[in-house]
Length: 88
Image 1 (cartoon, helix red, strand yellow):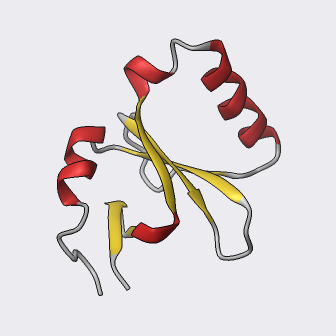
Image 2 (cartoon, rainbow, N blue to C red):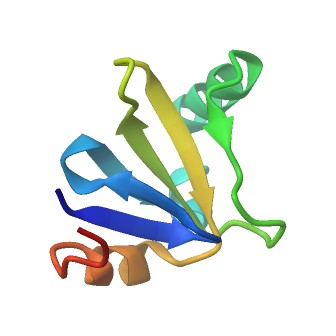
Image 3 (cartoon, rainbow, N blue to C red):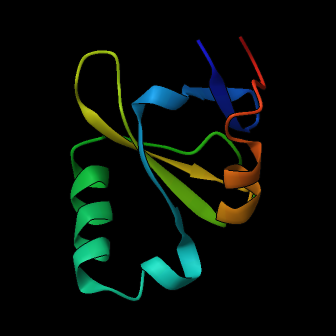
């Protein structure tokens, strides 16, 4: 399996990733803000770093639940890491 390191030791299986989103551009949409708010209320968010997040990853957890993981890396940086076999 190939994993994507999203920062601070947190890795997500690439096949479980639904999307990678930039915080500055995606949170302009009220739909995205609602998605993030609902995920937070349902305790389906993760923040592996204390740094200000630059992006978030929407992914499917092993139990089938959709989760949000905030990352201190930019979405471009995360896209650049994909498919390079960061962790096997």
